[in-house]
Image 1 (cartoon, rainbow, N blue to C red):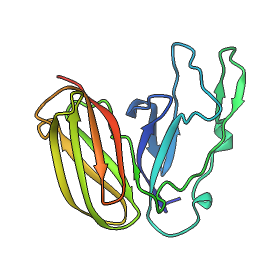
Image 2: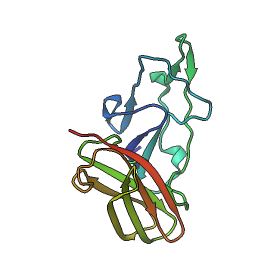
Image 3: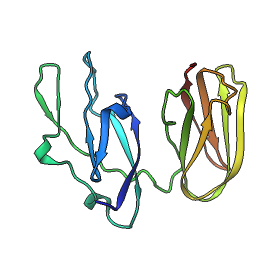
Length: 181
């Protein structure tokens, strides 16, 4: 319904790009394929849909798989496997650091995190040797927050980088890749 707005799609076991989905009339259409078999475990997350609530309500009532479009997955023998939604409330009262999007990136990326309470946060980006190449501290609100950064903010240092988000009682680190143009 119009109560949810899709914020982003985060890759999990499969890499999702803008070529794999489109949104029309507030409906998300997705298709993904691979040239080679991909081993997927029972607990593997394929991808994550991140929504922003436009109004209050119960998440379970906000969307559904459209059964008339045959939501399904095929195995290596082209046998049909059913597709299920796993509903999770990602914006909880917990500190959470999300994967930057897009990743890898060539110009700009966005780092999102959830805070259990408002407060001071430091975001640090460093290279594989541990050298700090970007640091920013500021006050952030309770709930979902995001910070955009450009390759210029990162001194145009391409390759594998790590970003750390920390507050007074929590810290998390994730890896990102800046591609050279």
